Length: 134
Image (cartoon, rainbow, N blue to C red; front, top):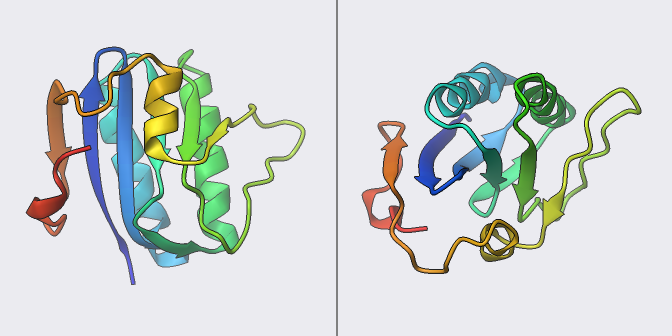
């Protein structure tokens, strides 16, 4: 099983929504999605895990590696709606990763109005079209 993703920009924050299972088989695809976000935004990136079914240790490492990758560019990575089966525990050498209970809380932390239309949006081919609104 792999992941699907959607990246939307809202003012100075990007939202990388991920669905599926973030395991060893999906790590490269997730890294590519982070690269997409890196190339198309300038501010914080909130990784929205609302539609994620779960993650493995490799998937959690991919998130901490993405946080370090973005931190090197001066861009924080934040999480929204982490899976119930575990929490992300970065080691001492990793940047702090703020966790929001849901996407609306994450957007509110960046003063993005709820229901506001995204500036731009991209998605992987199998991302369901009926879920395109943040």
